[in-house]
Length: 409
Image (cartoon, rainbow, N blue to C red; front, side):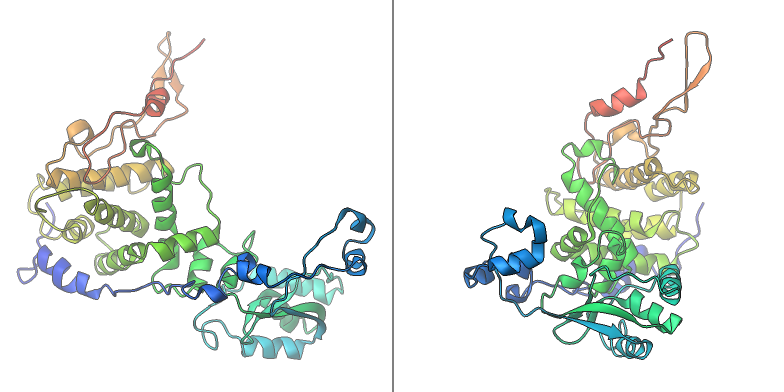
């Protein structure tokens, strides 16, 4: 039996008056509204206004002995400029001071400094083994440093300057999200740099889950982000087009902050559950809701208002508690499916197994001699994934194959 909510506060009051009122209308600063200063490398206007071709002399300078293979290279006029300079420790210090992340440059924040990277760069500079790779320090048209903070920090630390090309005059609003994303900027870092006002790590995770769900052909066979890989700019673009993601993160963060000790799953799980329930409610026809998604999830997270073991939220919490020490992709699916089962039960929609617990693949299977053989899909969900507001579906063939592995001697 869980503790009752205070008499002065019912779950409906919490969700309708306090929690929902705390959700701001816009949590994501949208970029790209001004098409003239975004995605400039794809600008047809720039291409149409640039008709001059590079001379053979310039092509020879660029491509050297391979110049004979290139012809008709079009030169494009942009605001970008380039210069090679010596960055002394003093200059590096000043550049960092006047382009401080989140202070001088509050809109487009740069990622946090990686101390190990600075340490390695600093050592190379002290040992006079710093290479001129051609990678520039990139500066925007308003003087803000978009790329190069690690090198500048290293120069300050080593008290040794270095020679570097400078590319300046960058006007593309979205350039910061696409610079150096291969190995150094995570999805959450890109989101944080874009001005997102909610927890960027949580937002990044539920954005990946939401995008993976949308791309799943048979959503009853949803497998989370298994087998998917999204580059940071793609996730940022997805967040910008679906600001409901940030609203869900905001709602859940408020509830979890108040009832952290009672919470039995991570914020991304609750936030994605809230997002998908709200999204599905816009796609299906339901005459009247017995309770709001906010009230339901508040009860699941906090246990407020639960008086009996028969309460749906109590059963959901009980099942989540059994998985509290699991953090695999399998358990993620089980937790989400259980939360969605509880929601569908409130709506009177049939769920797989007619109960909250999710059926899973056994850890072992007996061979002909009665020996236990470990199953490769042990722990995997062994029923169709539960979709909120949608009746249970048939178990996908892929799940049948995983659970019905035959032992071959």
